[in-house]
Image (cartoon, rainbow, N blue to C red; front, side, top):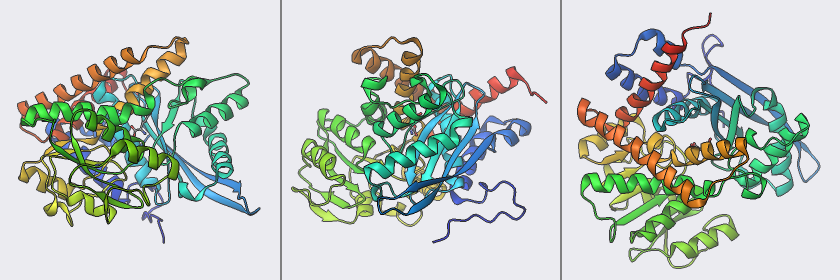
Length: 428
Ligand code: GLU
């Protein structure tokens, strides 16, 4: 299957991807509301830098295989570039660039002194053995080495990567620079300079924003129902937090399928199962459906928690939820977005809903920089405060300007970056 983009003139290779076009459509909607200076807009519509690298590894069968890796840096006006590294078989330069842009808005919205970036390797992470995964991660780190660093660009986990990969990145970078440099990457294991709660933070943050949204729409979480599309790091921790609040999780989907139980799934058991088996394939206590079919199960709270653009013009009319909590990045296409707004679904946009991960990454970076680590309670409280404050900014903007929550979130973020760019001026 081809993933090549074919720009007419060899320039702007990211622009022709559907994922980047969707990011631009959201950006343009917000820029319109803000009446953004076209000069600023023309700068913000493009990433500042994209690096594309070839990453060779020796497979366990002895053969050399070369994978394509990316690091896209969208904007560093607010501080060093920040964003995760994704391992996925379908990722391309346009998607990485779109995700980098969304990191700029996410950091600005929460008020973090960080810019936006994203990295990726086009590989199916489940096809890699432990050794292959380590080789790939180390060689990718070496290849993007010239453009990352603790004050330059700080990677983190994303889909298909976790704290183990972050430890390898930390080690590879440190070896090459001759000193331990834990602050080059976040999402590390606690024993190698990671922060407590970083692993749980994205899912927990999702639930803090769901609490705020429930308050806004008058939904009592205790006894309500939720469905999760995705059961990786974000999905599992969000599900556990929902269960703690008395929410009945009636369906979850992962790569292996959809698992439904109208009486409520045993989430702690499924969490343990997914840990040991990598997927939910074969887990007990649920009826089996297709993974995408969980999206259309009637529920109070729907959490897309996997890949992007799963809610489209093709299935949006079948969705039955009151709150759409966008744990995944870019789960809703612009045409589906319009339909959901018309139906009165309350959307918690991705850059707000899943900002808990990068927020605790920021805490990890700060703690690593001063070699002083905070308690779990301190981190949880700071996370809750920052996310709820961001939520209020979005809610207030949406009400004052009568725009969607998505446009409001983008506006708050873009306005912040615009202010900083003006103050700093153009170096030319
Ligand atoms: N990959 C996560 C995101 O999309 C976290 C990024 C980070 O911690 O830097 O927000």
